[in-house]
Length: 306
Image (cartoon, rainbow, N blue to C red):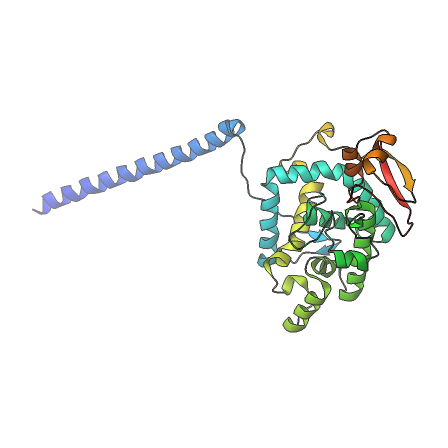
């Protein structure tokens, strides 16, 4: 009886060892298969989805994002959104070739960090958009704020759609906010939620640092979205975006015609200057009517496409 038990135990041990060896070999083989699949097959896949590796010095206008899990996960979220929402991000890059050469020198002239051109991308995708709340243009001004910053806003002329005028107004807003709140990061947050609401939150939470504040979802993501857009658009190849120069949207080529009086028909005006009503509106989206009464006798710079 003792002898038979010992033999059985030996048999069981041998079978167990064989099973463990077989499992190990299969596991190693499976791992080799995965590696081989990744190396040999990945190039044939429609796309390869990878995680985003964040650098340690992510910043907005030189103001570094805190190196803690909360801030980095919030950046990571916006990086993933903008890296893997391909069609939208490609459009941003194409349109940047047209609008950044207009925006960049105005930011420099006005003493606003160059990073804030990405705020315009976050606001509108560099299109003359209209929000449900009534914000208009590339910089998304409400009518009341536009008028506060000396823009003409009426049924015939709406300078919120004039990229040069609106960029200068945005610079004034941002510099005022920077003076009020102390940092460019807070200035950017206030651009989204408004100065009074931001100040109210700071007072109620006894905090002045954007990264330490609890905010509504939109503003909580807003600065991180600007930072993510900056990272992706400045280093497109690092995130898998490749565009040839001829794929970028070209800057507008135009001459200026000064208009000091009324215009009975912009269609007639366009034809008189060798263009179409459609192209006149594409180059001058701030023209919001088919005519201009111009009772105030203001002088307008109208772009005529060449």
